[in-house]
Image (cartoon, rainbow, N blue to C red):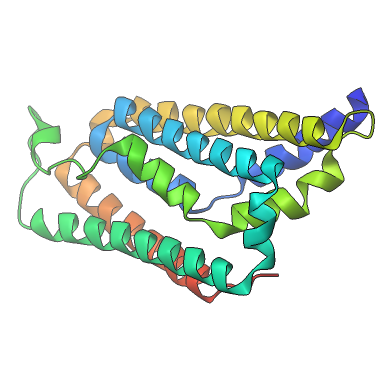
Length: 212
């Protein structure tokens, strides 16, 4: 059973480290508003994973994964939210156009992203139907055979949540180590543009993705 758990953790770690919407959302928050906002966004994303985990263990996520209509509704809502966040970032970059860098107070040149960072992370993750498909399709095959199905699923969800906190939390700390650089107006404006385009791109990808 230990070897099965280690193998499952390895698969989950690889999936966690693949860049996706979560990393784009965290990047924008950490660069624009600092470590606290970045970590709170990570907490929201992790809470979203736990919500999907509870639904999966209860069997409700399987209903979403099996229903084309329900899947499409959640998919389009999630895509719209990512596009909204991306547009918000592009507008923030546009508002900062023409401002010059201020070495004394670099972070004051552009306003931080609007909205609660924990809620932003939570909503972006809860509105990702791929998590439901992942939890109901892949996790059962990774669950150790020596445990009851629900117990094994719950354990893997907790492992995935812990890996997410560790990976994205370390990423936030790495970004904020270079806070002075990222806080410069020109750099922040460029990062807002990049993350805005990336978020809109992920939104389009989510909207056009098939359920399989």
